Image 1 (cartoon, rainbow, N blue to C red):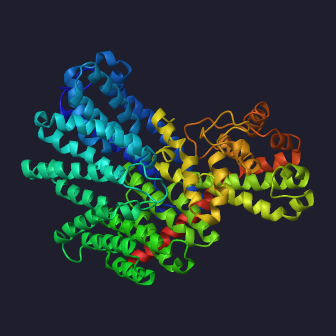
Image 2 (cartoon, rainbow, N blue to C red):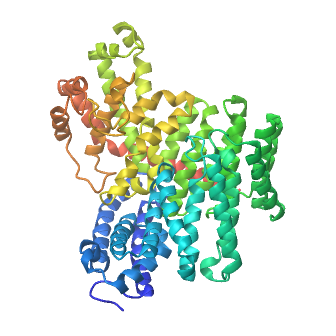
Image 3 (cartoon, rainbow, N blue to C red):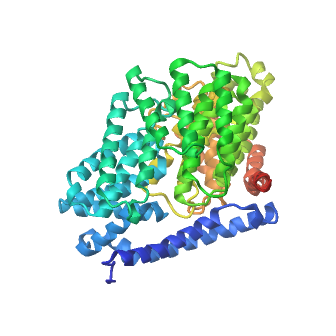
Amino acid sequence: MEKEHGFTEYEEWAEYFKIYTDRILSIEKLTSFSSAHYQNGAHWLTLYKKRALCLREMYLDNEKYLERHLYWFIKNPEHWEADVAASLLDYLFRNSIRIEDIEATQKTAESLYNYYQQADNEIAMMKCTLIILTNRIMLDFPHNKEQILSLCEWAIDVYERNYDQLNAVERSMGLSFYDYESNACSEYVNFDPIISPQTLIKLYQRRMRHIERFIAEEDLSLRVNHIVPYLRVCWQCGFVGIPIKAKHTAFTAEQLAMFYEVCRQMENETQAGSIQDVKVCLIKLMLTYQEQGLDKEQVMAELIRLQNMLPKPTMTYDDELMDALQILSCAIRIIAKDDKKYQAEVKGILQILLDAYLCLPNDNYIEHITDNAIFLYMFPLLNVLPADEILRITLFLTIFRQPQTAAHTIMVGKLATTIVAAMIDKIPALFMRMSCFSSIAHVQDNRQKIIDYVGEAALLHDVGKILSSNVINMQYRRLIDLEFEAIKLHPISSGEILKQIPTIADFYDIAVGHHKSYDGQKGYPIDFDNLHSPQKLFIDLITICDTLDAATDNLGRNYARTKQFKEVLEELNSEKGSRYSDSIVDLILNDDELQIQLEELLNSREESYRQVFEIIDSELREFQTKQTI
């Protein structure tokens, strides 16, 4: 029954959110890219600018739509009614991952959690926790693993203690806590382990005990339970894949024997020649390699044979194929690590992964899947490639996932190379603070090298944003706190990407430090000491260029007021010596010619966006050609 505020039936909330989700999907359709829709770069840019206005209007309209039946309770939590809250929570518990709007689901879940906490209803609080967990996972899964595990531990305890009181949907959806726990138990090459081998095994055994009980007791013909047998396989595969994905192996012979036993069990239940069979073969091969030290050449040859058994990626998302490709990428990384002779094999799997993710449907879930795959599986493969190839792939991945971030990095590069050239010419002594320069003549002799280095640093300074496409691509409103927490992690993500690739690891401090203030007192990450970095001068430069572009951007930041160049200069001047380098700011303020150059670059921002269009257009056409062969 519809009330003045809210509904009392699940089906009514379903219809309400279907209309809202369709509106969000229409916004996301506007942000997606298909070169077939555009005649050329100029046409794309014209529509891009029109889209910015449209996005803002659509967002404001959506806010009005949510105001009466949802936000009224969030703003007035004392007015929650039992039947309204229960029916809304039932809907969100089952469908939050499909709503496409983290702002709406997070605010609602937090409000409902407080409501049910006051009522001492821990089953309802558990259901709210699933929604909150889903949002954390969608925003930044790798960096939220400890929080995810902690929330899962609490929720699983509530779920198991109250299992007999739960209805069929609650029992089925409660398996999601084990699923999230299973994913969070995975170890990755670019992260130190956070869980001991003993705990990993203990949690896995608990998951399997419960799902076996579920399969034995529950009605698997119910639609809500159709995925349960596949979940069981996923948990098995995720568990046995841990030693392959891990940064370093720390398992005893007895523990490795358990991995082998699970592999044998999976093998007995798997159809020969299936994707699942290929995954099991991959895992068994790599477990044997890690334990017995097989010949690298033979192992790589077998990996390529298994790779050729997998079907060709298509325009639709296939979870099992993506998982197989990720396991394959980890296996190839292990064999190819620091060995340049395997460049062809690395390029081969990188291209397959690119093809797999290039034209997937555009929604929050697929963005989450793709971002994690690029961050966790593709970047760790790059270390055996030449530096220019790494830069090309990195720039393309940024363009492919976030066109506006790519345009931003291109613009920061133009600004930074222009300013650093003026620094070399007019204040070369500033570089003497860096130990790599012995004299002013040494600085000037290396003029072009410095300019090129700064240009590359600019292209890489925001590479960690690749993990935050759900937030970055949402350019029609301001961020909620949870989203801002996620985006503040991008310097750390950038550092994690760079430090595992020796040829670009030298840019680590610049990427990690470009959101710290000049005096080190403000900004993030809090624990990064920019004051003692040997790259501090370049950190300060990229920080200023980042601000210059972001503040004056009239294309990629639809939710923020665009500032004029002179206005930004005034802000730089007012905060020089604290937030910004006084030496670089004074150089800009006292050099009229440099100011003209910088303002002209900022006014030609459209050229950076056209460059982005041309790269996307070229790559998509190549992909579409391959699909027809």
